[in-house]
Image 1 (cartoon, rainbow, N blue to C red):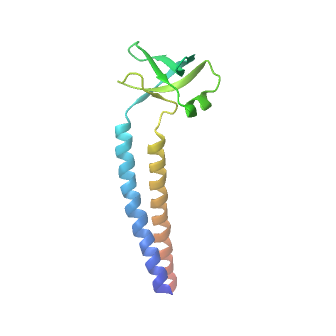
Image 2: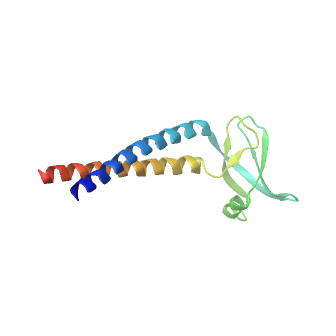
Image 3: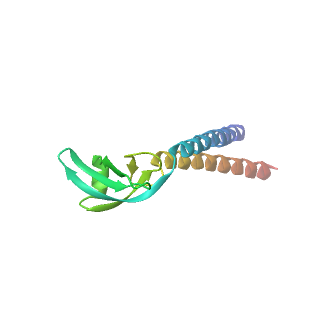
Length: 131
């Protein structure tokens, strides 16, 4: 029984550290490709094609982007809303500064590394307890 437990703990250790490090690298690459998003104050306006937001960028240009159904549910009936616009691009915006994809991959990587740490600690404790 103890050999099977040792094997399972070693598998969890390798999977935790290996997959966690791989996902942490993917999260870092995704973070770098995500770019810089700067805060902006946008005006929410209904149009014949749906609800749009309009804002001024850092260069003084006017930008416009349509709202998705999910974004519209978050914005609600507000006349103005704080958004984040992509620096160097026109008509690109989102409601959060950081990408939800990057955040979820980073949390998954941290969870897997945590699994590896717990499995390694448990394996070490069992090694010393058995003598």
